[in-house]
Length: 148
Length: 435
Image 1 (cartoon, rainbow over the protein chains, first blue to last red):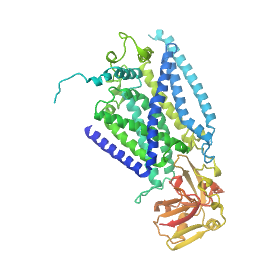
Image 2: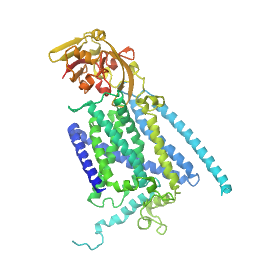
Image 3: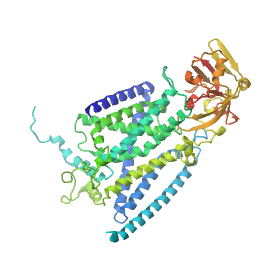
Image 4: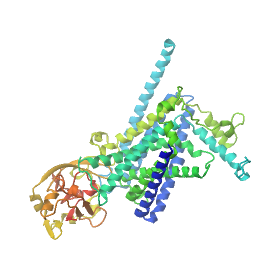
């Protein structure tokens, strides 16, 4: 394992140096500030904002766990996360579409309408999944005394 | 050297007090069944594969566009670049749910205490910070580039995306080296869980008594009360919670891939709801990357005295559009495959590049430089190696899909060659020169 470790670190450092050299060679120094700003922004937006929202949603749902079955909560939580990740990809496209593109073949679809449609299907699928889950667990509870 | 234990220096005492308690409290409240080293290994493996796939296809695309002098490229299958760049963009999109899932799993590590134990620990944490930041930026700018949202970032896309790819793969290698024992330990499922479904050899929470308010020490202050509230929330079952997490990431990845990959892979065109391009949308039923207006050729491309000049040393010939159309015409089906990931196969018609070069007595095995009518920009000049120049399928296309080229597709004449990136299928040809 030690030899692998050393090899990986050597390769890693070599690639980091190469990346740095490419950056020095290809990108004008006056742009470095912008890249650093984006690095810091990425950490702050993820570790501060996105993770914070995830924790808040998670805890709120867990609090609701006293009244709602945990399986149902897990399904709802999954749906929220899937919806959020798809939104994360589509929202910037809707914004750019609003600003305008250089030619009409870039962003030619109605992304906002498609996203609403996606939310609708997601809600429907989630509802069906919850119904199936509740029915299966109810049947298991009924069967339990007989099988044991 | 004095090795006898001694009490911590007074100035460090606060680490053992409030900050230490706060960080441990945070980690404890973030503990969750899906936050464990087995899950980090599983997601890390997938993300690592996606990163390496993106890196490999990215390098291929980079060197196809800017080859080193000795480089040769395969020309078959004709859809090779369409495939490699489609995979590059699609794998990049799949990285969004994968990296968010991975960061979710390891998030409590952010609050480890003490924050820095030693110089090597500092280096490790710094390299992780660089790795995470570079990866998030790389994926984000890649995504924004697919719909040319350049106004958002204050640096050049192509050069930054290229440089960061080395930083990321280098950081990945170091990260794997640091975590090698954890990765090896949790590589296989059967070694990772005991019969009750608990992760073997992993304590997901720091000791309670030493670090956080307990029932004996009632919650005090705002943070104390928040942690007490969190501790009182019902715990999900570990197995349900883990399966739910894996299913969520799987569904999210499947959704973002399925609803965008149609721009590169035709069978998914029917569910292309969110890709920045749509097959069949555009002049000649083809999408456009750079329009004639953006390239500044609206007038020069339709000038009546346009002619394509073919040069080989002292020999030179000019072909008007009518003369080009009078040469033997060939029909080829080739994809136009953009670096931005979209691609579409079209039927092209025109004389072979080879035949034009023969008319000025060019040897076999020469390279050419094509010049566009564009006055400036990186796409004005295009060099093509002999493997593409002599290919039967390489045309100077005059028609596409049964119509004359639209001005946005390069009227009066454009290059089309197999397995080449769209930006090197030069539009609005002006001269072709043997080099």
